[in-house]
Length: 261
Image (cartoon, rainbow, N blue to C red; front, side):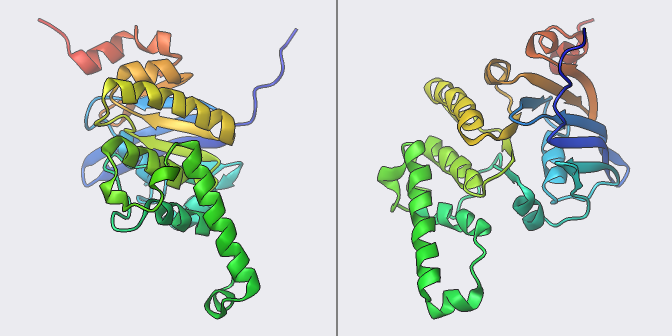
């Protein structure tokens, strides 16, 4: 007797390829991320992981391949249109607006979902003022979920490193994404912060009903939180499967460790 059909993928990537001159940065990359999936993308330095994220978010246009979110093609859309469609990301190198306050960083992201008319905003109409209050309230609520409400009015650049990482995730969530791309969220964190991050990632998936694709070099974190892992090496997919399969795959071991004489 057959079981229930697999859920339709939320994010469907097929045959994605990109070359820079004669260098193939990503070759024939495919992935199906289901609703509320928590998947990992790993590989040695230079394997093409961040290039995949740049393709998914419109920073690069692929030479070939398709990207579909809920069956809708995102091909040739600029980054702001892809964000509005429901894909948000963080960056390996934190990209906050450092001189703005913590809450202002989140408010800017919340405004992406605002349909307030420019004229109404300039004239400070009652509707515009109500919308501003709603955005501020929502921003403070998001900060509270990550224990950042006490620092809401501090400059973002003054936060400790781990808190800046959290703020970048909060800002991404403020756009109400369907898919969240996390690029090296554990970079620079100490062991305690990494343990807290693992719990945070699970909480984000469950509380916000969002699918997550995660890049990180911390194998302990990736193996702990991810349900499925795809491995890149020199732009090519060399393995894909659950964590226990990936960590025992000979090709993966060779890619990370090399082979002895």
